[in-house]
Length: 402
Ligand SMILES: *Cc1c(COP(=O)(O)O)cnc(C)c1O
Image (tube, rainbow, N blue to C red; front, side, top):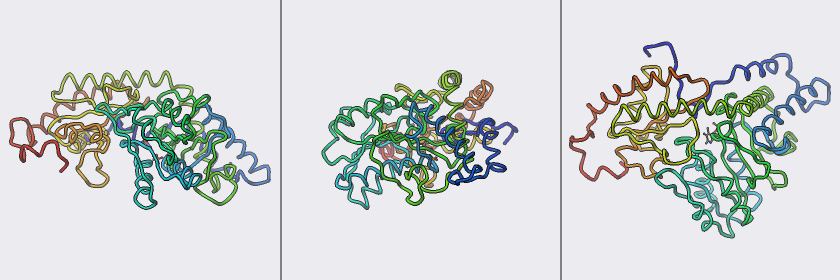
């Protein structure tokens, strides 16, 4: 790294814990160590703080406090919701989701499909990353146990019409879950008159720590717990509550609710400046999901003929943290399942990176990227075996997975 400054543009992967959140949590690591289930005053004090946190999370979502269950993460919330539906309706063996979900939903569905005899409909997206609600309507049948559709996509930021989808589900008496991990805190959510039955959020995507999440379960929705044991969370999630983190999530939710409008118009301005700056200075780029409704902080952009991973390495050397949509965790160089579903041409899909901003970013951060990126792309295109005018491995190597 050439400079000391970290330019963190990977907020859809995780966020900085807000200083206010750290401060709110601190006493629960020292003086306030009571167990909220204890009979004595010392536990009772902590129970009150849990109540406050639950109320704050409920406020962010326009929900009632008793509709909030604290979990260990967004992934646990997703698993809990989908598995709950399968336990309640064991005879219904069909699930509807989308092809672009986070692994927290996608891989639960795949697991049910491969080892529990489920049939799963994966709704496809169009070239801008949008789902088609008519396809949802025709996919529902009498065996459908649950529909799970994310509120906003973590890779592209594309926002799905989940309120509409939930109405369709309700009209057919099917449970509806949404993974709102990326939507929460970035776009308004109000579950008051909503048909959404269950909704997942995660702390570390909204400036609370990693390892804390929540699941909203609408009052009256039949629910089967994931963790079975003690009576915590009204028997809906056993295990002694992670008090410091729950308090942190509560504070983060309060901040997100209070600042949502102001912060997100600030973030959107930065994102739009970044997007415009890149498009104006670099040729053969493509904004993925640019024609759809998007989260204010996300920019997924492809640079033709080069590998996203190489761009990230060069950016990282400049202190800039971004992300590639690709399945890099598996060591695979295949483009991401999200971009493949959108049928992004492979010469572009391989060269995709995601910038995701937060309120902690500044105009200088964006200016620095706009200054450094063109040189990086130029260098990589010079050495790319795929660049225009250079022979490809064969004409048909474009348009296929390798
Ligand atoms: C990060 C993320 C999750 C997982 O949340 P964890 O708390 O990391 O388990 C689920 N869904 C989406 C859309 C995410 O972005």
